[in-house]
Image 1 (cartoon, rainbow, N blue to C red):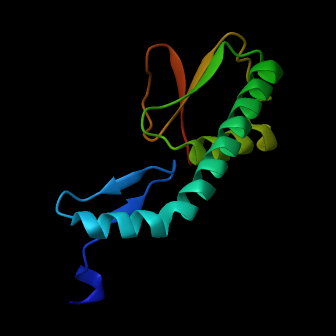
Image 2 (cartoon, helix red, strand yellow):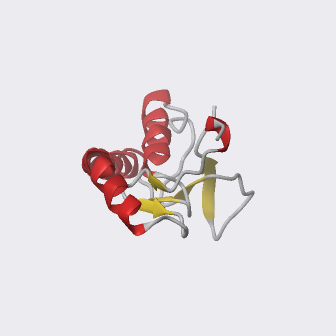
Length: 125
């Protein structure tokens, strides 16, 4: 079978959980789980680190700009949220705007307005 069309029976998600195809054979499943267990542990450690980093950066933005809150949009991975928050902190793009008591939403998609939140796309430039 061509490598390009070889089915992936088991993969590890960004947060360290497994995605398993429905047609995997049970004996093959246990072998694959055993092979991927170290990768899962590393990803779990990474995701815990990223969650702590996200919390720190959100708190820093809230305190620095007196925001009412900053939230991660549905489906946005923690790693993308951390990247966006780091760019907001480093760039100083919010320095010239009074955002006191505003809520910011970091989203995968730009929305003109969303429940009173100011929306930033996670990969803004």
